[in-house]
Image (cartoon, rainbow, N blue to C red; front, top):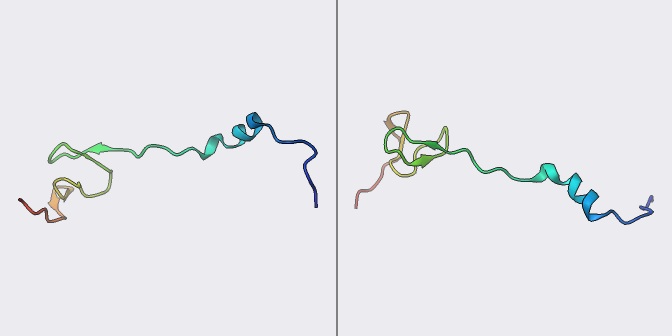
Length: 60
């Protein structure tokens, strides 16, 4: 099997891993309540999606 002749430096190793970072999720504003919600998902606070009530929220 082939073996490396030299140790890979931290700089070279980290340059190779630059594209492995994670991005923060895109967050949009809910048109009903104004809370932050993921796009194409029901709002976690009011339970509405595209103006329709999708998730029943228990009012306490």
